[in-house]
Length: 159
Image 1 (spheres, helix red, strand yellow):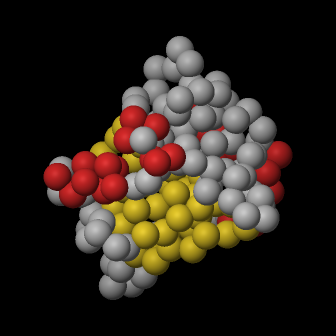
Image 2 (cartoon, helix red, strand yellow):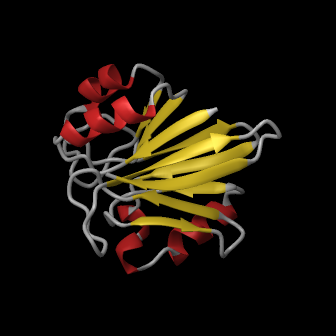
Image 3 (cartoon, one colour):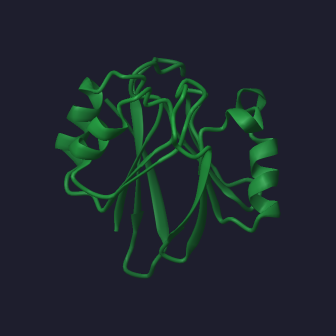
């Protein structure tokens, strides 16, 4: 199973178009918020099931602030991250995920890619396709793949 994880597109879908061309086929797309009203366009572009949550810039959106998913054998929490103050660090979001028995927590908001295994929870942030903030400021996304044994593997990919 191949899953595309993106966040913080902020109504700029040019890079998402490039990502879709490079990564097809995918079985699932996860968008971690700040689509800013482009949810329908993102779903159409994806050509696969899409899970999406509201970000801090998704004003008046009917999107949920978080979702619980089952991906293979993993319990996954997806959220934008701003309710867990992720700009100040990931301790709060990891604590919440652990308390609710999640294996993986995926979030955006910081515009900085991250894969962290340090607290018994896999914490993932794909960065931003539109306004990256990490050193080098390259747009980024993440690929999650489940191998034949059901093990998850993650890769941060830069444009």
